Length: 78
Image 1 (spheres, one colour):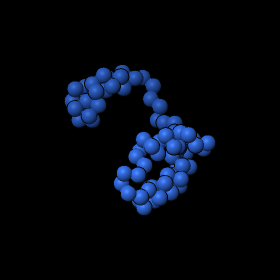
Image 2 (cartoon, rainbow, N blue to C red):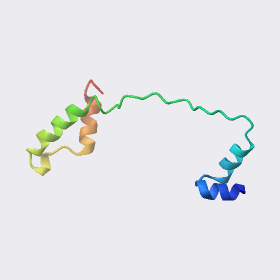
Image 3 (cartoon, rainbow, N blue to C red):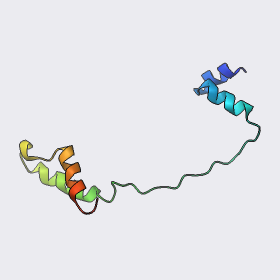
Image 4 (cartoon, one colour):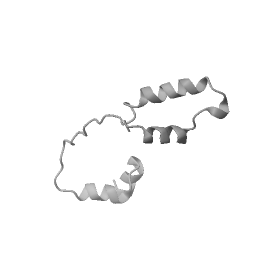
């Protein structure tokens, strides 16, 4: 099969296909990435509380996304 045919079938760029075709040494195993903790997970409770509190307010007085971001930035936990 031609390089162009492989590239078309796999959806990869032809230069990438050529790189792997010319590669002499193949490494069967790939290194697994370490799972990272989500940065927002520790702040999720606080944000949810703010949103629930804002639902009780009229639309004009609710927090926007940028206001929530600024409040998080100014808090000590962020």
